[in-house]
Length: 71
Image (cartoon, rainbow, N blue to C red; front, side, top):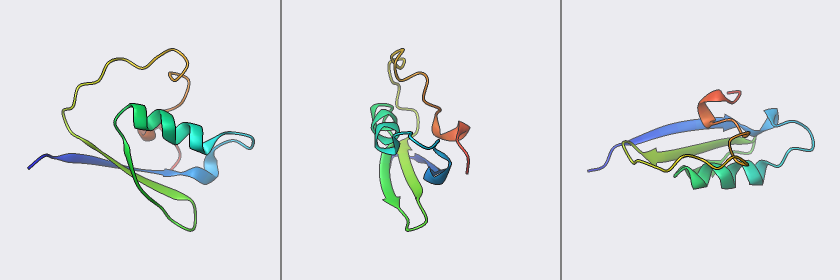
């Protein structure tokens, strides 16, 4: 059975005018799968452990990874 790592992101901390959908799209490119968004705007994500990915593109490198976001 595959192992997964989980992360949560508080979408309330995305700067005003920021694009939460764009952030979630970019995280999806890094194999993060959105599980749920709670009524208080907490996004829960998961991805398979040990799944190698190509480096992110320059345009998406400016978006913080889930571990670097406010929780």
